[in-house]
Length: 192
Image (spheres, one colour):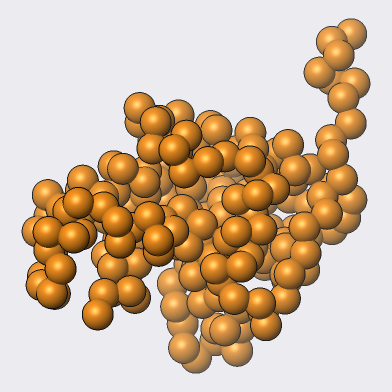
């Protein structure tokens, strides 16, 4: 029998509360998975990024699954925070970059001990809005750290301009291996 089949996953140990800042939770995750921003910049495409992020999260003791028979509009993913081996499921019908964001959104739910099914949209009528918004902020800060984003040449060159050309958004999205929507939300949040 293969040694991989006999390997017991690590026990997941990360924990935070909604009273922590999204930045501190993002730093906690970055330190735990031990993937530098430089390594993130080196990936040749979003599939390499997705595979690496999944492997890194699985190394923490989280079981990652792909679901394929659910429309993205119904669910982009969900998490089950049961210990010792929590689960994140991401929708295989979503884009690779969408799955990357969902992966970290759902990981944040587990870290907060708050499992659930998510569509990642801010719904202000939802009583869990604060948690959903917090998970979105952590995922965004983790994938596109504020300090790194604001140091990018295309951001510096566009300083003071509230409009963003598609090529600039695309350049940044490709640099961080996220969607243009994530980049635009991050810029909107931190642009003076």
